[in-house]
Image 1 (tube, one colour):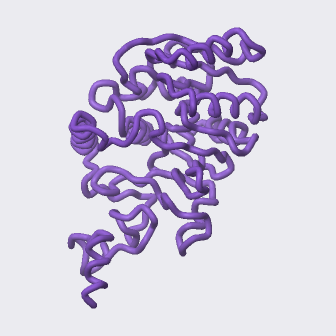
Image 2 (tube, helix red, strand yellow):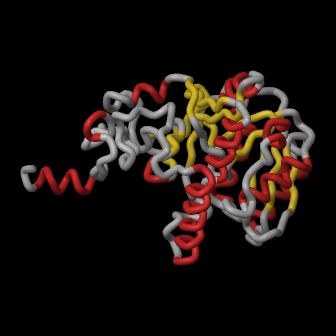
Image 3 (cartoon, one colour):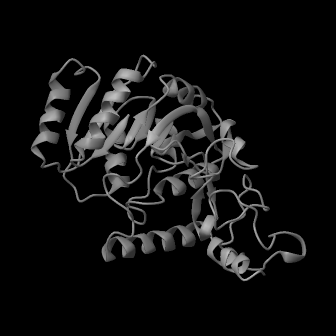
Length: 300
């Protein structure tokens, strides 16, 4: 398991401790990639892991390059020799102790590329249950912010199934497959959408990406780096990454084979698209949620 981090002890400690205390799978090692931590408490915690009772499970590597999520993970994968790798964000927290057993079982299938988990926000709503490519012109999480059983489409998050993409916040795959497709994109996608790009490369190589609801974890999303709109620099970088993904894969207008043409591409909660995106309405611009709300308020 590869966990990049910089400070963030308030999320890193629950992440690592939950893996060590709640993971039933017997054979794993955690590689924490310390990307320039300078907080004394974080450094003390990392030292305690490397020297404490879990020293045979946890290794800490210092890598002070400018933050580049793709490069940090690629360098870590090159350094390890495990046949399986797990990319894990430092703000993940284990819920079900058999999470890794289930993900490994899927990853070992020869036709499988990446395997994604069911991730929940702290309030119990869905953070990740598969990624739909083409959503918003790029990609979006299926049924995000909903509860299982909420709405006509929500129960789908309880089924193991194939998706075009899954998130690298918690992703398991064979190392040889990761290397075969070139790993994560370092130049064009240093922070965001590198997992979507990876999954599309896997599909282009003939692999199938899978989502399993039985690997259940919390995800305190963006707890370390904050939202992508937090500063002008982050907004500019995010816009460049969107443009890169759209240019490489044509995600604007992408018809995801595992998405429904009846569902909205502007609302991740799985509402029906309006107007419909099929039949005589095909090609018409879909109204987003604020526009629909405004129309209802006017009685339209």
